[in-house]
Length: 150
Image (cartoon, rainbow, N blue to C red; front, side, top):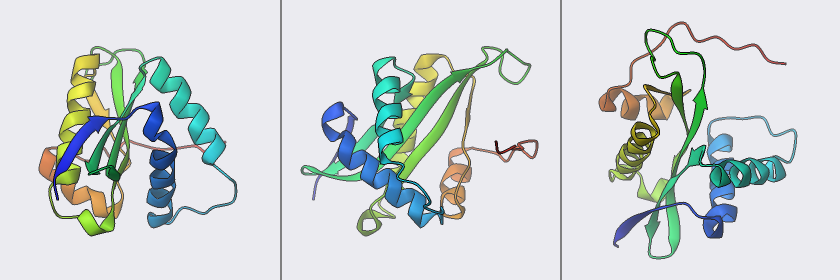
């Protein structure tokens, strides 16, 4: 087994979307709609304008791990003077390949993408399983985050 890493391209997008859906299921998401068309539209648009980037891990030709970083901009503030924020998502490793450092390597690569983009901060809504990885990497909890569902 030789694990390799590469940036996601349109060629791998359908498999990436299946893995994203598997991730959401594993995290306990309620499936009440077919989200696949919306995901495909999102990734196509944001990969084209460079506001979404992903690194994937492969064992041969098989995608075994995914990551994603969406870039957003809001008015600068003291904690983020550029106003550019990376929103981390799509962190998923095939269960057979977990605890091998794959997620850590993918995380490192998308964090570097955020740095290149000029982000001053990266945010994630972490699953219980992911908290240990993100904490070990240096993420801290922000108790101010709230959400209003429309």
